[in-house]
Amino acid sequence: MEIKNIETADCRVLSTSISTNEIRIKFESIYDISIKQFIKDVDLVIYDWCSFEAKLYITNAPGESFVGINLTTDKLEFFSLIQNIEINEDDLLLQGFSRESGNWLEYRFKSGGVYFQTAC
Image (cartoon, rainbow, N blue to C red; front, side, top):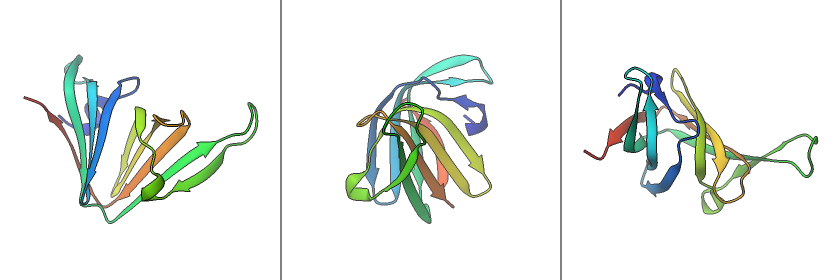
């Protein structure tokens, strides 16, 4: 599975686990554009990154500007949906909605590895 051929928008995130320099995000299913099929029970694994940032975007009222808040590891929020995965050179950006607050959430990784793994 090549990341460029995978779509996760509107695919539910079941869980997120974090260990030393590895984050594993478990999806109920993802869509593989190249074979035009949903694949069930898939993990997105990100590992060995140099830096990691998590940012939450909130607003006090509809129509107001969003304010970005950097999240610390002890206050980290997790995804319920990942709407976008963007890879540019050594930069990986995940964007979607927070399970805890429902707000827009971004994870940014520098110089890490990434792959999808199926349960089979």
